[in-house]
Length: 185
Image (cartoon, rainbow, N blue to C red; front, side):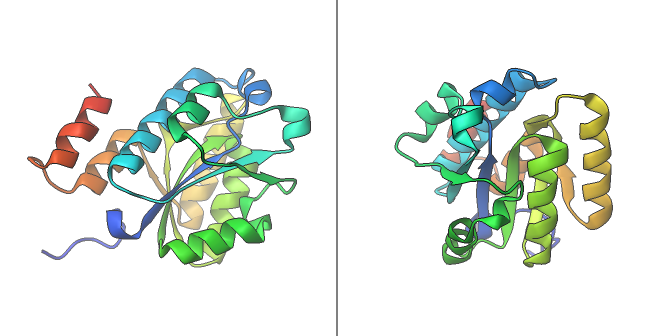
């Protein structure tokens, strides 16, 4: 079956969890939703065997990643960074390229800073970028809304967590479908 090129394909998709750290997440407009959404995306990615990368922005100042995310990820070590864009880390870009991913799903904070700069830079590196709006946040609603609009105009695909999950699943009736759909009930 011919598929639209903007539909996620699990064989070419990676998940990037950006800077969902305790100190900064505490002041996000929808911090609890972002953590819950990130956990769903991580669990689904684990079920579907997708590459998962995790970053922390200046952990000395912003603290560690939220506990629920770290528990879900098990032993995944965060890539520590000082640049707002995750693409400032050659380790991260190398890992994405080595994974074979062409499509990157982003979740994280802040939408108008690290998420936006990463999304735009990933486009510049020829990745297709998908952002579920219920998996990103900023301190101010307007900052997040403007960032989403700007990223969409630049070519980022704006979606939702459920939209991402069902695109990756592609069909009902599989063992993966049963496991992943339990995450959204």
